[in-house]
Length: 445
Ligand code: PHE
Image (cartoon, rainbow, N blue to C red; front, side, top):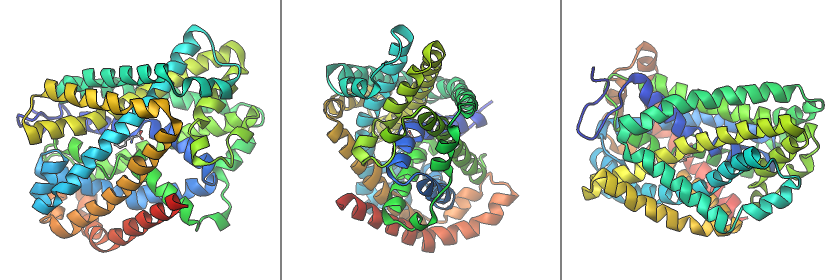
């Protein structure tokens, strides 16, 4: 049976295939490494509260807007914006692709750390001096090598195309990851002293909720984690048929993405506090916090002997898997753009893009400073601008997005669509614009 769209561009093989791949693209290092780091450096529970609110009030409507563009246009970001919003939007499409290129190149450096920690835990055990160990392995030739290896692995999957490669990988990998995390969270709850971690993570100080920096950080985290503002979700939706209730699926994607981040916090913070690593976690600057997950957790695991070692292997395997499904979605945006715009064949396009990303990633593999800046600019500011532009494109330029989303929609989605359209036209430009402004202000500080 033809599950979806069915054009020569490729299509998802099943209803579930798109959902799992979209969730796989959303769930990644963003939910674990970036979420833990930002929650640590940006106010703990107060950040978490703002992040939850933004995910559902801003993230879901935006996600729906991207899906509407992608499915209507059935093209990658540049062509899709041209088709639904007009020629003048082509530069925005190029900005999306450039942003994705930069995100991929630092992202796979971090993915390389995860793979390396997993391999080391398996072969030689966990580091006894975690801070020092992280300092030793985070940058340098080996970090570059792991990064290049991770890009190559991603390229192999993407070469297989939508159905054979991406969908099959996501079908197996995503459920595995979630089960691992739940297991780890349950285990973490049994530790003596976990309560303090829960309190840092879950009990907000309300005077902090109106902080501009927390707003900017939480918004950047929302966009990054849901892969919004650079056309990743748009690209996945370009392979969709009209038989999907996109309102419902957006809700599912957001809940799944949030659940993984939240569970990752339920793993990280109790462990960190119970085992006395809190001083390495709280009150750090953004640069210092890059290593939180990679210093505190292995350190904690190492204190627990063989059991900790086993848990460490599992944890870093899960992290690597999550990272892979996200780099797959990043690379897919780039490759499909090259295919659509330059009419290059998939294999060649994948190799060319992979080579470029491998080269650019050498810089962050040699400098944590560069990595943090790339994360702040491409993983924050550009997504913030992209999110704002998408609300404008869909709210003010696209012809009848409500009709696009009504296709395949159930009664609930249909009922909510007029409200969504009002939000996208009049409310979201103000919110995403203000959020972008607060990102700029806090990054200039
Ligand atoms: N959402 C992914 C994560 O949380 C990262 C990502 C961002 C993927 C942007 C694609 C596009 O890890």
